[in-house]
Image (spheres, rainbow, N blue to C red):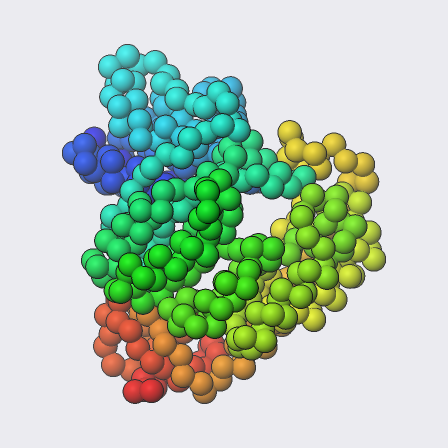
Length: 430
């Protein structure tokens, strides 16, 4: 059969989609996005808009390809079987486990023409599903999933119910996958998970820091290791030492803040307060003053007052993030926050979102300008035909456009950096 895999949502979904794609290729199926017989959709449920996009994609594919078979997986598939099974052309539904069964379930659907499902009935007790990825289309960066699930149960989040409790992948499998990927040419590895740096909480005497050390020891071909996200509470003294001493650890950390108001953080069931967060950020910046720090902030959480928002705005401004990812609060049925009183009006949310986005643009521009004329090491990722230049990212996640001599994807170059829209044409030998 011809097939295409469609991914909505996070980098974990991207990793799992790639693993399923490899399973289908191993069965002799072939990728064809123009005329697919089969569509595998990795759904997302992080917001109600994410769920809407999943449903829209199903209907569009069924309309454009009347005979197509649609197989669904991911968070929305796990929690909404009764809704999704009635949508057109849906033949297979698995959730956030049992994805390795998709090729068999497709065969069974073809034989019986009846809906095939393999959903977890105890969503808080999933086992870790080992799925290996040995290659990516992108030859410069590879994602490696190291854990699944989450034990935090933030008041706004449905994901623990869709993904289950935190469970860590076996260290040997993580290291072996990274070793294989780096030996086959990937210069950058991104560690990812639902609660990435929570890795090891379910293990005896082995932590996320231990995993990082084992990766660096076992993978001499690894050039750059990036962490998709880490909570402030997970940044230990050992981690700070590693950040200071290991140049292969990317000079960029994504540390979710969510709110700068202690009252709102308590309602969110976030397990830190702003004093602790600021202390951690200061510790990082003392070691690496020019590190790029990005964050997430949720705007309009139930009960968020104007004063709460202004406190959040002032704190985000003072911490000097290089970018803020801003999310308007969206009620999720089944979460504690959806039942809370004092829901914030949509118009108020919109105004607050716009203010934070404007602040993010200012911070992003200020951080980029700090690097004007300085040398950055860049991994070339692709040719940008619109800009007529090569494009790549530095360790501190600045996007760089490189003019000048012909380059190839995967080339490692040092460039004198100039913020966009200027190019960085000068390749140096520094």
